[in-house]
Image (cartoon, rainbow, N blue to C red; front, top):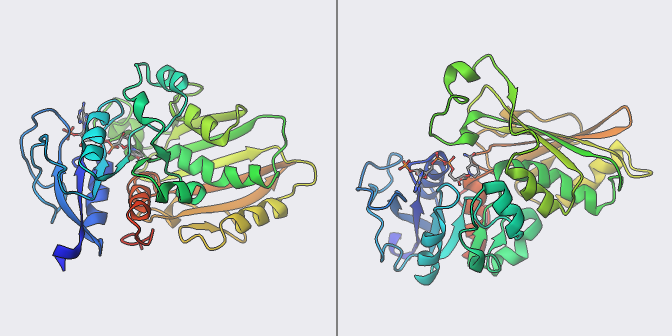
Length: 331
Ligand SMILES: NC(=O)c1ccc[n+]([C@@H]2O[C@H](COP(=O)([O-])OP(=O)(O)OC[C@H]3O[C@@H](n4cnc5c(N)ncnc54)[C@H](OP(=O)(O)O)[C@@H]3O)[C@@H](O)[C@H]2O)c1
């Protein structure tokens, strides 16, 4: 059976997103996890990132030869040489980093404070927000996997724009909260246990790198995005505060979302009530609920940042590119 499987490698497998991806691939009926790598130049072979995965092997020029699928789970700015090598080897590629998520090079360089690493790849890279870009993803060999916060904001926001539920004036507030795994495994002062537990803070106000990604893919310059650090490990809860278009109500907004996501296997629009983090932790799904407060529409979405915000969305994208059922290995 194993001979008939498609073959995949994960680069950056020792990180939080890479480990989740390895776990998903180990249970995938049609894809075999053949190799895992560190992306550090010359990094020695090492432990398996999760039980049952192959031992980490040294990344070499021919490491991607013969593979169908390569996932890059490295920080921004380091993935693109490996993206190129994987594409040259004939593989389909999902880059989980931010390198290829923005078409706007100027906005990317302003947000990331460095020259863009691969403007030549921007045309080929498809933004992998599956529910809104499925057909382009199917025909692609390179997907830029969306950021975790952008996924949690864009999934509830895009259908409401499309259905003209949001006023064309006034701020669109995206008040987002993430568990600490969103920051990756490297410890910082902010993510130390004693600074997180029994604490709660906003950060990156007006400067967070996900703001231009949200603005570009929502095609909207009125979004006020404020992220917060929750005292838990995984999950994002985003509350959108929206000025309604004339005639739009809580019921019409909920109906627009329900219609947009009817038949979607991984997005659930609640008929009533507001979702909580626990509903989606360790799951590849997004749940959303709608309410209204003093004339504003209020929409709450929840995802697991490491899954729908990273690894499971990456696999959903790869399944589509490989012609598989998009939820294979996810449910
Ligand atoms: N965490 C999330 O919720 C989330 C959500 C969406 C997207 N992402 C994106 O996914 C990527 C991985 O995130 P993560 O949270 O898994 O990060 P992480 O836990 O910090 O892991 C990063 C991985 O990249 C490797 N790495 C770190 N610095 C490197 C460098 N300078 N050169 C080469 N390799 C390096 C690490 O290897 P070592 O073991 O050698 O350090 C590790 O395997 C990032 O681009 C992130 O923006 C993360």
